[in-house]
Image 1 (cartoon, rainbow, N blue to C red):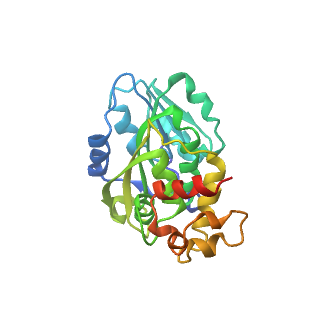
Image 2 (cartoon, one colour):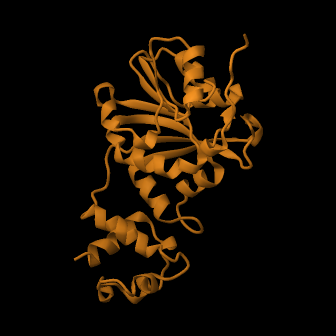
Image 3 (cartoon, rainbow, N blue to C red):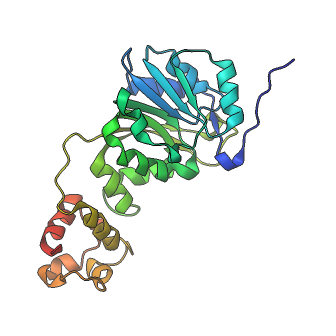
Length: 258
């Protein structure tokens, strides 16, 4: 009897990697050893899973939302270091990783949940050492923006919490089935020493307001808020948030946050 191979399911954004050179790019950037704890999001047919297990890692946890592909992985790969969790990563309690921290994440992320996963990683960055993830090219470029178009809350937020580095650009032909867009390998590492932000939660709400309408000036975006804009110079108020660095926005926050 032939082995049952599940079909690709569009609702899970399943585009499975098939090019070895892409895996070589990942392992050229991230080094693992016999003490490494690694997790993968979306094991699929096991292309990346097998390569991770070919390294001397201590353990590999694979999160696979699709029970058919999870069963396939379990049948195909027999390794005591492998743990397969049939679970949506967004519903997982990351504190379960605490005993074996720090963790390395290596994953081809489903495109439709990239940002929810990134926010989840930020919230649990104390458990993470580093990682390489596959995201849409457009998303990767947005995350690395320092100014201008597409620079905004998202860029500032993730650059504040993580060191980010663009790796190889990946064509649709590297996947089965091929997506309609190019992808990018993105290296990340939680920043060890964060700049102190007073009233951090409200600062990020303030940043969202500053970028609410990216082409508008600070004066226009903040006009209907409770902030006292008289503490800011006319020269500052005519600028757009897209023209300002996080250090400059922090300076503004210090002036008007009370």
